[in-house]
Length: 369
Image (cartoon, rainbow, N blue to C red):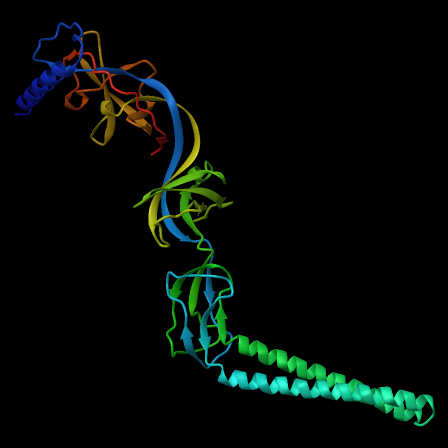
């Protein structure tokens, strides 16, 4: 059954190639019923070397926001998840009626203390004139100086109390410490909060990055500034390696890379994507992708001897350049391999060689596996 199927497939492919060959078939002693194939040479081409690894998209800096006073109730919540905010914008407000009262008392005490300073300075000025004409004693003048100093000290104390009350009042409003995007909300209006409790999270400047763990061999090939390409629903997102871990973990033997994503597009924090990191460029030996067949978990190509007998050659593949595949081992430049018809061949099959139909030249960037 297998032999019959191969014969039928070979005859069909031969008829198809003969009909679209575009030129006379090459002369061969093989009978017309044998499989018709085309040949392509192994050629040197520019290769872009890449490292492929998967990792999560994360916030470059995610700030945990909370308040500094306890036992206050949330009276206003002005933002929600995904909302963009500006530095200084009020994100939420706490009940501040008691704080307002304390602030007013502190301001009144400060005003009273400042009035005392004004009076003490006026008394001292008059005392200096009287002392000059000997109407009061030196000790009385000293008392007036001491009274001014005491009044100024009370004024300074009252001012510090007023500043403290103002600070507590300011704590009743949670303001954005920087521009960014709200990424998480852990509070509801009416909730009584405690100091230091996380209430909101802010992605600073909305900046995202991609992180990945690389084995030590691949880590040594990646340098800061290298380009990384990530797939997304809107197309490829391009980033740049910002930092490379200076060492590897002693247990996993991996290190971390960090890539800035200035235009993340639809990518969201937590998304796990496969990235291709460009590590360099060079030349490589390539053959058409159609020439490479996968069997038994290995890659093979077929070459022909002088009698047009196909011989299966095991190869090691590398990068892909458009519709070309890099051959790392198993061939040398100029070797002719079967292109059309390779998928139907077996080791030792006799074939007919026909001319390939001219095709447009394929160009493209290489992507390493």
